[in-house]
Amino acid sequence: MSQKTIVKIQRFLKKNADAIQKLATKHHKEFLRGEKSRTDLIEKYQKSHSRIIREIANNLDIKDLKRGTKLFQKIVEQFAHEAVQNGLTIEESVDGTIFLKQAIWKKMENGKLLKELTIEEYHKIHQVIDRYCYVVTSKIAFTYHREFQNIEGNQSYLAEASKILSSSLDYQTTLNTIATLAVPHTADWCAVDILDSDGVLQQVAIAHKNPKKIKWAKEFQKKRPTDMNAKTGVPNVLRTGKSELYPIITEEMLVAGARSKKELKLIRGIGFTSAMVVPIFSQIKPIGAITFVTAETNKHYNQGDLAMAQELGMRASMAIENARLYKGSQEAITLRDDFISVASHELKTPVTSVKMFTQVLKKHSEQIGDVKAVNHLSKMDKQLDKLTELIYDLLNISKIQAGRMEFRKELFNFDDAVKEVIDVLQQSATGHKIVIQGQTKKKIRGDEERIGQVINNLVSNAVKYSPKAKKVIVSLSSDKENVRVAVQDFGIGMEKAHLGKIFERFYRVYDTADKTFPGLGIGLYISSEIVKRHGGKVWVDSTIGKGSIFYVSLPIR
Image (cartoon, rainbow, N blue to C red):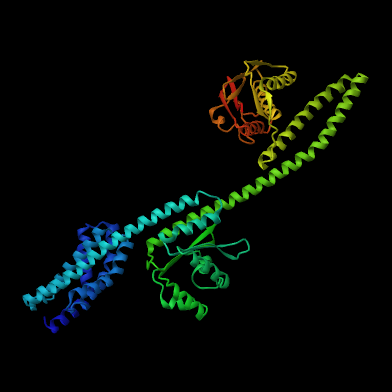
């Protein structure tokens, strides 16, 4: 083929590149039958075809077709990435190349170029254009395959990272695990930086497959802390709240980012190829960033990778926010428990004094025959007993929360312990008959006083929540491993919705008239904790209007 003919075709293709592209787009749109969402996408994608046509023209005169193919593959690689990132299907991308080839020949035919070619020249030109269009198609197909593998890998990493983020409320440990997981899956280097309470940037995690490089990076960070005035990177992401993507890290970028020749030499030695930085938020304010960098693998990040990283950043933000909220709530709970503990201790002394003076006044009133005063002072004494019991319960709660509740475990007769508690309660529960049924004939090892407290609480509740009934039944039974006590009342009962919550702190049950009974809802919580710490279990069955049965099972040994 003469050089003159080649030059003529090259000029024609370059001059008519846009017209050929528009013709290809027109035919492709007609093929899609005007589906708006797809045709808009096709038009955006096929604007790149003008570049492809010009590159076909530039490589038309290469005599070695294999060499020309290799050159052309490099040219269309970015084009293939754009097709994937723009959201085209592989069918649309391949069809677009077919329509492009048809448009090239149609335009050359209309321009009467084909008539000027000999058969040999026609076949030669046809072979070159077909080969280059095939390169475009195959490169797109290969890129799709690779991108799908990358997407699947990103989704897998995101799923695993999300699992880790939700598994712990210690966000610093969690973020360190996230960074470690990123290497080598997503990056060769991964770092997490967070602003501390004073607004100082702290690197809370850094990961690389080589431990020596991690050590080097930490030392480098100490000697050369991040320049918070930098126009790019973590400082800029913290200022703007916007992610940064660097598909290719150029020499110019390295020079611009280095603060000295020594630093530039070190950075060059690492061999950074691509990077992305995504923000971490707290209440819509940027408080940190995750940085992903490739070096040894020569991977180049794209928009798909950035989308994955941004999603990870958002999930990390939620994890940090949850951790901070949890920490705040725990501090509030600790403060509350400390207050309850101190207040309870402080209340014991004056209440004890008031009770003592009440009993003195009551005895004096009895001696002088003042019946009215004796009646009032008796009622006052009972209320002081209730207040003393409440203070005792509050102290128990603070001890449970602090893990300081003590147990003096000794061998004791279970039946005798239950009977002793019932005998004392029966004196005050004059409106109910407390009936003991069965026996265990067992001795168990435990804190007799604490277990007596459990029985006392359950029977007292049975009396309180069955105001119209006359009887409470306490049933005792046992097997080789456990003793059991069941406390049955015939009172108001509970709905099923309450049964799973009744042993929670401060939980109170409402009756059918939407009223509560006196108490703070801590007795059952304390009882369940005592039983648990003896290796036992407590549960309840209840029916509205028919009453409740509370069960306690305790191991004999």
